[in-house]
Every structure is written in C-alpha cells, then in structure tokens.
Image 1 (cartoon, rainbow, N blue to C red):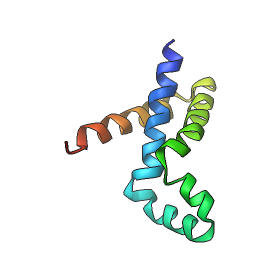
Image 2 (tube, rainbow, N blue to C red; image 1 turned 90 degrees about the vertical axis):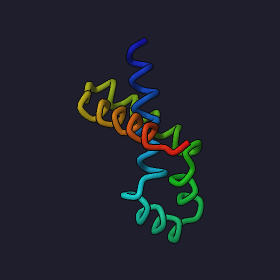
Image 3 (cartoon, one colour; image 1 turned 135 degrees about the vertical axis):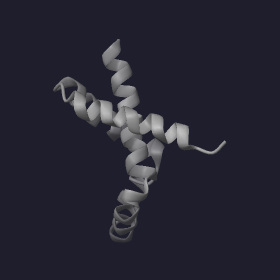
Image 4 (tube, one colour; image 1 turned 90 degrees about the horizontal axis):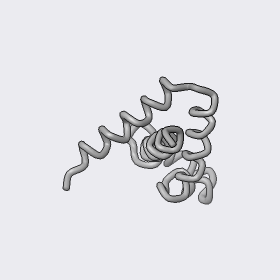
Length: 84
C-alpha cells in the first residue's frame, strides 16, 4: 500500500514538474514547435500523468527513493505555493 502512495504522489510531482514548471517551459515550447501532438502530451497534466505514473512506478520498483521523495516534495511545494 505504501508503494501505491509513493507512486501516486511522486507521479503527480513529476507531472507538475514537466507540464507546469518554468524550468521546462522552454522545452515544452520547443517540443510543441517541432511536433504539435507530443507538445500537447507534455503540456497536459492529465495526458502526461500516465507516463509520470509509469516512471514513478519504475523509480519505486527499483528503489530510487531519493528521486521518489524529491518528486513528492516538489508536489507538496507546488500545492503550498498555489494561490487560492
């Protein structure tokens, strides 16, 4: 059960990093310019969420806890920083 929680939260963190963060903005714009469909994939949280979950599953499965916890902390910081 704890693995599922780690996968869900780290997958969400990874998804928000890729689809919403400023650090990936230039990459998203470049990819969208090169390929509209793939650009939409990495710009849409719901679309990228599947792949974020798969990547997180692999990170948890292969015990890469430092990355998993980093992604979870990123998600928590994103949520705390959101203006309501």
